[in-house]
Structures are given as structure tokens and as C-alpha cells.
Length: 376
Ligand code: GMT
Image (cartoon, rainbow, N blue to C red; front, side):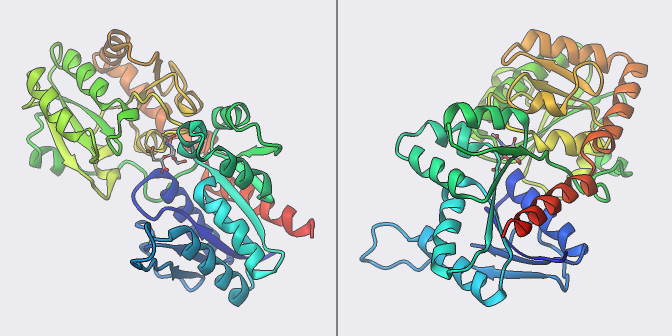
């Protein structure tokens, strides 16, 4: 069954936007008509495909409004696209505000478009505890025709925090295996001044406090006091200034490379030996899966969905949040043992194939859409 599917996500950098866009691209390749309804072109929507359409949400600022009416403008655009394009499905990423906007849009359009909401984390793990939004999150979840979560941990947390009367389907994230694979990027090592005997650690995030990038730097300082190593910090965000001070305090300024936001992460992963993802909240950890696909084992915290991606002692290690001694010891046990590192790297490479294959995950979404269409 070929469907007409609307997709709404935050178009800025971030795992939820990546998943929404990659899903849309893969569904388009399978013959579905995909209509992105977003405030800007999603950053990964970098292909021209005859089945992909982009409808921009414009938010006008009027002096009578204290705040720009993004939610209303989005709902209005959704309703317009639902009617004009005769959408079968509207798949939104994030309960707040997107699910609520979709429900409003469905009423405005007066059609039986089915609403699928995917929860990615922040709407539950952060906003779920905000009393000013709690009722709206519950409403968005309960009134969606179907709700998915990107990990079992997020499903459990949603049930605990929101207590919505709704069955939640877990559909894990995936990566595009055609992009995330080990590539030859040795030239980058020379360009970044990384010596042959140095091990390369990498962290990729939006440098929010929950990512605990300061733990990454502190653990790295311990590691680099034992073996020659460099740390690639990829991304940008509110913690950056504090981190720049921290690398000076810990005297690792010359060993830490702040690379800012980057595309083509597969090249940076391909010159890395180990990823550190030490977050205090993380519903999945898409960057860990991306890194693994390029042969990089990961050390992650025992938090949220991270242990569903990283298998302790197989493709990396799981450590308790903030346990810098354990994190650095595990890292050294791997980085100082070439055959173990090779074994973990191999296991990391096959992890996306074993458990997160894109075509399997995309099929799960298609089956979900089809089941909703049959429930008309
Ligand atoms: O991690 C972020 O701050 C970005 C956030 C987003 O909305 O893109 O990521 C969330 O969704 C990703 C895709 O499902 C997950 O891989 C991340 O774990 C999740 N982030 C958090 O739960 C903090």
C-alpha cells in the first residue's frame, strides 16, 4: 500500500530531526509520497526525490502577539496540507507541541488522517516533569492514533511520568548504513595533527548540561595521563565556554580539539578509536549507533536507552553515571589491548546489522501505518 505521509519534526540539528528525515527519505525511496511540514528545510533533507515535498511553516510576528504563534501556524499549515494532499498519515516527532498541533490540524481539516507520534526523549524526560505542560503532553499522547518510543527505557519512563492511557510501541532508531560505514579519512589525522601513536576518542552532542561533556573531558584527562591520546569534541552548545575553561584547568588544552558542528561525521568516526557518551539523560543515543557503524566501540552511562544500544563487554562498556574512575579504567583496558580493541570494533560494526537494520525498522513503521489505515 503506497501512502501519503506528512512528517513534522524540529528541522534543526538533533537526533529526532535526523530520524524523521531519514525515515522520510527511505519511505520515499519505497514509493510513498512524503510531505515534510516544518519551519525550515530539515538539515538532512539534502536529496532531490520525486516523492519528497517540503511545506514551510511561516510564523509571522505581529505586535499584538506577545509571542510568535508557531504552534497555531504549524497546525494551520498541517491542516492545509492534510486537505490539499489528502494525507493518509501525519507522523509527528515530539508530543509537545507537534502531536497537539496535529490533533488540532486534524479537527481543522475534518478528515480521518491518522496521527502517529514518536517520542524521542526530551518531551518526557524533561518536559514531562514540567507541570505547565503535563496535561498537554498527556493529551497529545492519548489523542494520537498511535504512539511510538525510540527505546524500552523511554516507554517505561513515559508510562511512569505521564501515565497516559495509551499503548506505546517501541521502535528503535536506525542509521543509513550507506553513509555510516568506515571510510578512508587518514588525511584528517594529519590535518588535525594527530600522531600515529595517539589513540583518538570522540564525543558528539549539542553540549547541553544533560550530556555531561565535562565528564567526558575529565575522563579523557585521566586516560591521556597514561597513554598518548587526543579527544575530538564535535558539536556546540551552552556548555562550550565552561568546557574551554575545564580543558585548561585539567591541562589537556593541547590534546582536546573543539571541532564545532560538523557534517560528514562518518569521516570523524573513521579516525576514532573510542566514543564516550556519558549523559545523565539519553533516551537512545543515536550518535553511539552512528559511531559503531563506523567501527567505533562506545563507553556509555547506565542511563535511559543507552544500554539498549551499547552491550557491556561486547561493543563497548556501560558505566555508572559520573564514575570517572571506572570510565577511564575501562577505556584504558580497551585502548591498551589492540586485539580486544579490534574485537570490540568488529562487534560495533555489526551491531546496526544485528539489531537496528534500517530496512527492518522502516518496515515496522510501514506496518504500523498500514494497521491504522485498516482500522478506518
Ligand atoms: O539529545 C538531544 O539533546 C537531542 C534530542 C533530539 O530531540 O533530537 O535527542 C533525542 O532523540 C534522539 C533520537 O531519537 C535520541 O537518540 C537521543 O537520545 C534523545 N536525547 C535525549 O533523550 C536527551
